[in-house]
Image 1 (cartoon, rainbow, N blue to C red):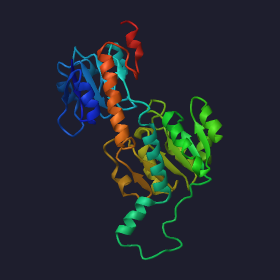
Image 2: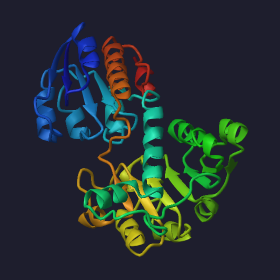
Image 3: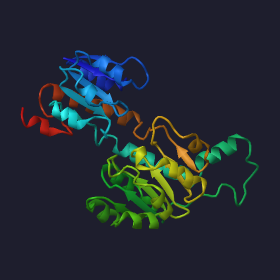
Image 4: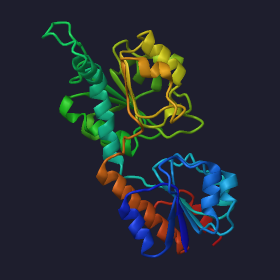
Length: 323
């Protein structure tokens, strides 16, 4: 069979696919347009796509041979799952393999903002450092502080467990009780408003859903402590970016660490000019190990799906009910 891959991914995944099928990789190092995806899909049986690819109803119904969609990401809001299910096409994702890498990026951002690492680096490189000073680059302590998790799934749990060494109190908001966090950290499940009011660090780990769009906006940011720090490694639109910029400029909170943005890849110019925010290019899972394992998982999902079997990480298994 033939598989279209929308972007170059680690060789381990491509080599796994090539053992059984013919593959075509989009040749440019950029996000393909919807038109380019439709063109690449012509006469293809499988589509291996990225989170940045718009796989809507038009794309899904553009190629009659299409049998399987494998997303190279945990999230899959870029894909019209309803349309895929309607066409009887299974869709898969890549959960688990990027959990620790993403959690580690959350901590990298947390420390970078708390201790003003990026700001201090620029200050030092610019030749402004003239010697130790008692008020120079004062930041926030981490040890013995309160950590608030908005979302306590795989990544949120991994992120929170790494707080053990810093003797932090953990609060969390989730639709379910997290017994692991409660047993190992003494974490407490609370309301969102309570978490925002009590936490020194608030880290977001929820998927992008209608219910989580702009979950953090003016009311929520004004509930946070003035010395609090917001970390977002989930999805940009969970935070109202315009209001966050206002909060950072007017010092409603101490700072923020962002790996995702509301209108990716566009980033507001005002955000770029602020010293109290650390910006990353949506690279939380960007370790060699994680990205390679994502490629292998996506390939295995594709191979299984093309055999007419339920892929290991199928997000719409109901398509097999009538097969």
